[in-house]
Length: 252
Image (cartoon, rainbow, N blue to C red; front, side, top):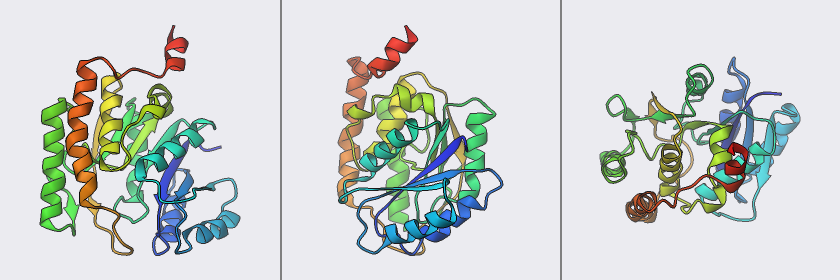
């Protein structure tokens, strides 16, 4: 049984999914993979089912009935992983914008260095983004600056989606009360991890824009993030960010 699982949400990723799965399984460190697919009409799930025969007990799929949002896909995956014995739970995109070779570096930050959340950061050592339009780079970079200013969260890349959690973080956060589904989901998870007192480390990575398939980014999710950040800050001020009740009982 591996101690680590990589959660990959998918919607129409047939061009990338087999290659990303093989790349993860080729690493010296053993990782399991859970794909959460939102009823991709392009046959993504069929590819995964075929590969599951090649990688039994290492590759898993959860199929949902429609396109329900990035945040809910990850929460579905988190709950699936917590119901099993995984100690380290990762988020990663399917399109190679996150380099699978960086997975062991995130793992090392949590397993060996004792951090509770390791973030694959584009901005903790300059701007490490390749092949993004300059407008999108600036929007992402200043979004993270805005988040730091409003929330006082000491993370350079608050919108990053390449992460490793210790299971105790996801057991403590009340996943049923996660508010956001899009861009702001990543901010909310980091902020609640910080407010609940967990240790966070940013690990510098290079983000490469997808070469195959279509981006799922749209302007509406930036609006969710802009107003959502102010709401998160207000919830902290008013003491409404609390650990899950069962976690409180365990600690007492």
